[in-house]
Image (cartoon, rainbow, N blue to C red):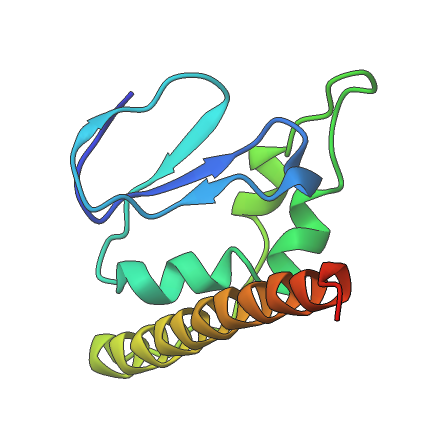
Amino acid sequence: MFSIRGDILYGKLRPYLHNWFLPSFSGLAVGDFWVLQPKDADSSFLFRLIQGQQFDDVANQSIGTKMPRADWNLVSKTLFFVPTSIDEQALIGRYFRSIDNLITLHQRKLDKMKELKKAFFEFDF
């Protein structure tokens, strides 16, 4: 299925793997992905919504055993609390994006500090 910038890709195969993506480009979505095309909603907010516990719980009530897939009939009938104001959705989406960026930054710093600590322990004094 064709995906445009702002669409959200959700990996429906083995949803517990958390394969989701908010691409900044258009292209073809191949494989077991839902292409969620926001209508009258903010993409960034909806991207964070699918990462939430409620969506995760519903999506993981899968169909199939060896290769479980999220059930669209179940997910599409679930009610989620979403602000009616797109401006408010955008603010919430930007807020969580900034938190994600901060977490990534600190994770990189932590990884560098762990490498530095490891190097110190390997150093002969």
